[in-house]
Length: 351
Image (cartoon, rainbow, N blue to C red; front, side):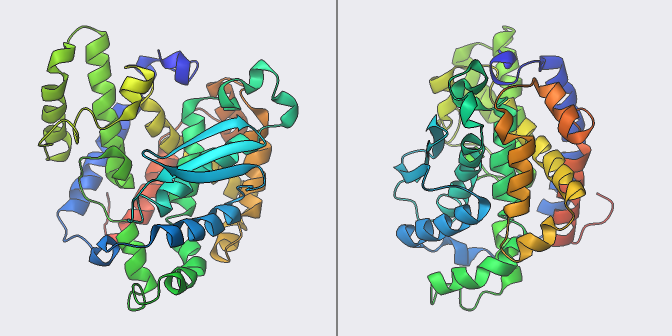
């Protein structure tokens, strides 16, 4: 099952990665959530969807998404899908007004789309470009998370774009300084819905799904008992319990669209790889961070296109990671990123 999403990945690999990551994440979550949460009430007001989409278009163009070879439209559930490298569709949540459901969800889907657009056109009619062309679901997800979080939720990025955002929504953000906005869009709090989870707690949602899938496949859990097992797991991991299955076991389209087993681990794999790939890019081009502060993503996009996108699914996962990062999949760059960013945001020491 895992081979369908991430060729060469085994359940033992995933369990080891998740165990090590969980050991590091749980104290970080605990250290953050015992503090008073940052004020994000201003983000809960409705923001015009059309203005958000127009602004998201500016940001995703800065990332490198080519609207001459792509299209954006509303949908019940955000997604990105390639008709081919010259026709990539991205979709945002219809009728939504919150930043996470529109602006940041669009940045996420554009990250997928940029990858799809970057595959060499001469691979389009080959097996190497099959199923959208990405090497694995985890690598594909790494690009969505990289552009959404490592770039799109970074302080440097908003140094350039926040004044433009304030001008886009006059009267709604005028009195909100950049640092308050930055803290709010990176707020950490346990939540029920995976697609709205913050960076620090997000992987706990994935671990729950993976553990339940393993129990189902191994026969330790009957399908009829899955809703109760879901509620128990959310209470153990996040200290919250859904009141119904809509916000519980039925919230993810992927189980009934793709089938149980072998998919959800790709999201956490993507988080891990996003930090490894970003570190590799900055090591090769130290000017990337300064460029992002000026709203320029060209060097980062060029590195990713050269080293990741253009190759389609030419390499298997382990070989690919070795080629770019000089080693295997490693959680340490990702943990370093989380500890540095959220250690500063929440004034943490030794977590």
